Image 1 (cartoon, helix red, strand yellow):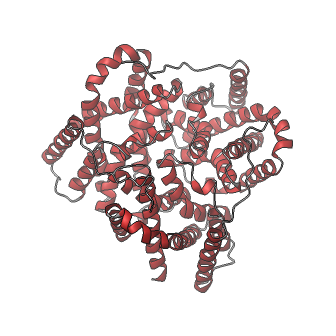
Image 2 (tube, each protein chain N blue to C red):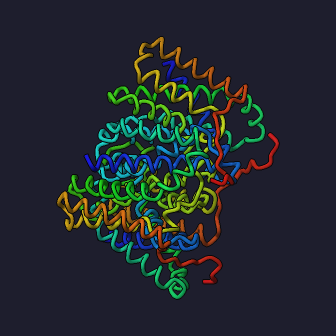
Image 3 (cartoon, one colour):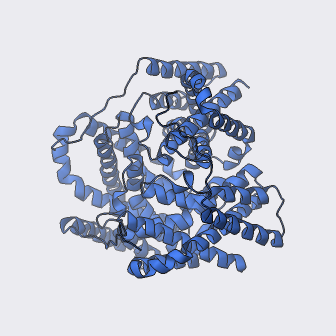
Length: 203
Length: 203
Length: 203
């Protein structure tokens, strides 16, 4: 039940992030819906395909689809008024989504008894795949590949679950809180992963 | 039989649209074939993956593959001469393809007894997925996400089939004609879906 | 055994090519790993999905995943020093990867008794899909679609295997050498596939 609420919060945050990118790119209403749906559900869909999880489960998320559609419609109808309020909630809801989705992705891979490599990939894809798909559909360089410490926490989730370190219900809640905190700290202190640029280097 | 002819017309229109985009982007012959194939068959492939439809059926479309290859070769060999004539047929053949493909996509989802959400997604992906893939491979913003009322008619197809409103053979033909007419009207009168831009808005 | 060595060489070459593109685009460490993994394993993953090959096999490549991670880490830590040496080996290792991967892809399709069209597509996707995915994630026009004769040799591999012309172990080695030589010749003499541009043409 609690996980469902985290999933709902994440779905709202991810679908609105897609809708905002679509509006920034001057896409029309269909573009808004497609980018929002891609952000909220694209990561899970790619994960299911790659780890061979049956797609049936995917289509049973009817209530989540409706929540996403409603969120995007609201943000589309009243963007300027709502945006100010939304900005305040954006980071925390997104962190909740990131954490819930990556743990959920890792658990799906565990259910199929896949090796730890697959569990990590499943966690990373569920947490970041939707955002990458959103950016590709918006003809942007995927944000997660070049800025902010975002994906590292999904790797952590995949590793913690895949290695068996975290396996109890209490442990999962602890991991969830840990990832939310890590993500919020990386936003707060503007942490970056190391870069190494090759541009214009004569090699 | 009639549906096969609609499918052939759509395949020709979609593959040529991909070939033209490739030539506009100065891609080479391989690029022309890949973009054409992606436009004509990419939507159906993505749909099959997402709704869990067996891929075997996909590989039995040998005659459609050959028709697409032939169409692209012809347009590649004689672009300037043929382009003038093609422009005249482009909109109507594309509308036929859009209509046939989206209805076909919805019927695939129905065969698997999927809920209406999946039926609508299947119709949308079959009708518009190929064009999105084409635009991504050409490093363009997907046309369908920002201009023209194109995707709305695929949603209509998915809804009409998925809700059970249209379920007889005659009903399918009626739906097919309705979507072709709607698409031609949106081209003729340059209909647009609502936009809401966030660019440069201080929020 | 020999094929495994070709596969390892190809994995190193492909993952480093992805890592270099990521560094050229000023992506961070996560971006480097994702682009490298996408280049090395993306083509095979897309092929498995499209020809319906079980994904289990994909997740049993643990040693290849580790080799790729190690290669990318090395290139990330010492880019300038190593780059000079790498440049000397880049073309030949990439040609070995292209040849090994496309033949392997064709053989996977053969195992599933798919028609020749699917065998050619499997060979093309395995050889070129990873590079396309890399370029899309880097917001570039896919190199393989517009420059150099690269994909033609994967079509050759798919045709030779799919038609049954090459079916013995010795024949496979011959095909492997032939494709490596063809690829090296196309680099050496800067062969191009025909282009036909439509830009700015009044049609």
